[in-house]
Image (cartoon, rainbow, N blue to C red):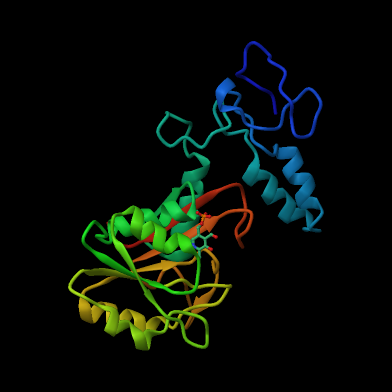
Length: 247
Ligand SMILES: Cc1ncc(COP(=O)(O)O)c(C=O)c1O
């Protein structure tokens, strides 16, 4: 990867040493990724993927279709179309069979978008699972709502039997977390939500690809939220995705 910015060629201490710094330096506007394409692929090789899978990985991370001055995923800067994010959104539309998919910067950002879309705002409440990850409740808080915690059952997922007692006139949404690669019992959660006119925000950050009664999680409620991070089932830098049928 060649630098197109940093015109004064200031020498920076890279984490890998040598002349080419690996770290992103916003101060110098030196737009290099933390891990370059070659470095990423050399890491991928260690997982023993077959040649076809390696080819697809190389195409996915290639920066050849990014504009001069990249690499960036800019949606709003007149980048050549389709940008990587839009290709990813297309794939999500097909995979989940939904009308809308929106790539964002993190799973937390995906949850925040969904919370706002579901009507979370100051004076409202969102029911979150007591076990999962703090980002679900934080996203409710970011939207100005108060998270209300629903305990889990022996499956360690949100216990639908406890839900109705937690619903108040302020409740706007239920946000179950499919956690640890497993899935929540969605039918009773959806039934209760419909009965009370509430939106369902599925936090799928830990269970992308998991199914409930043959349907992919994320496509069952009103919003499906995903995290793309090095700690998750879907890796690849940092990112997130919201899928929904709700304009
Ligand atoms: C269940 C759950 N939701 C949301 C998130 C937040 O995702 P991100 O780190 O991409 O913001 C995580 C991350 O660990 C998670 O485990």
